[in-house]
Image (cartoon, rainbow, N blue to C red; front, side, top):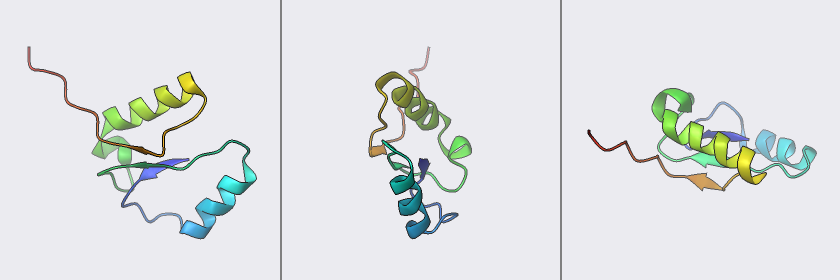
Amino acid sequence: MAGGETARALPVRAVRRVLRAIPHAREVRLLGCGHVPMDDDPRAVAHTILSTCLSGAAPRAVAPAPAPAAA
């Protein structure tokens, strides 16, 4: 379950309930993101999705991804 670190859409107790109900679930806080992390930091969201798919486990927190170098 991933969300922006400043998002308040779900109460903490609801998140904990979801994490207990889903085997192997993890909470991921996207640092510097709010309620719509895809707008705040699309690279961090993409990185989290890819990391989760490739490893089977999401990291606890993901720092914003660095911007690509200028060409």
